[in-house]
Length: 310
Image (cartoon, rainbow, N blue to C red; front, side, top):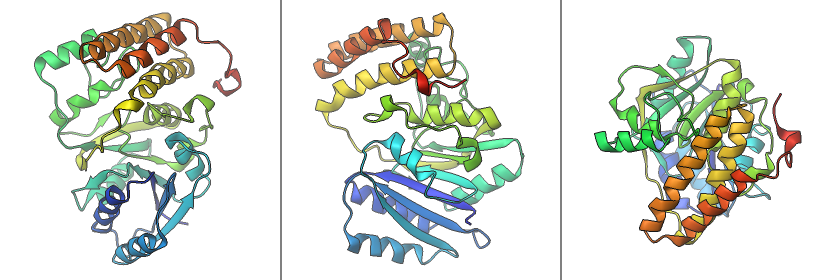
């Protein structure tokens, strides 16, 4: 039994993954903490590289590396399947292009949990998050942001995380930034292999937060900072990502038992994004958003009704 299970989903980004694991190995004040690190791989990592990762982690007081090669692709399935493969009381997950600059990141996370037994999730902040006054106004007008750093927008988008760089104290939140988030493993017992999340798992972090929040509080500790390198995605995938944004947020509204005004807000947000990417001449994205809008207007209701929560 481990105190912390670190899960890193990855796919053919070995250089990013190496930086991530090397930064984890530099964590300090963990003499009393047992850690397992699970790489959940949708790609291919050479055995010699895994040997290197094990050697890097040898410098930690009590840490072991585990490796799992998946057969079904998708980040949501990586997170879902990982729950059956780890045993830590706390599940800490990073994107493979996240780098921990603060050597006390994990210690701060553990201390935050210890400060309040009602806390079931703790998230950190990626450096560089900010927005101008006009950007904040536009974000609120297009339902991509809320006025509070810890609240989702009316359409359940997480643009409010751009306010996190202005915070200094730990605060309650509806959502985490998926590149670095943690939960008590018991709070994720309602996770399911949602079939609409098998490709581009847009908003997977918000789904996890929604499920975990049933069991306690979620908080952001702004002292827990990372660098998120945000490896670029290819332009030809923009259409599929755009459509997944619509579909996944639609089903998220279903799970949250949202009101009609929230669905209207989602349509408003998607319409704005359609115009935005038309002006950018990214027509792959435009086609994806248009397809997503049509889905929300005619979502083939009850197709996945067996997965809706009570």
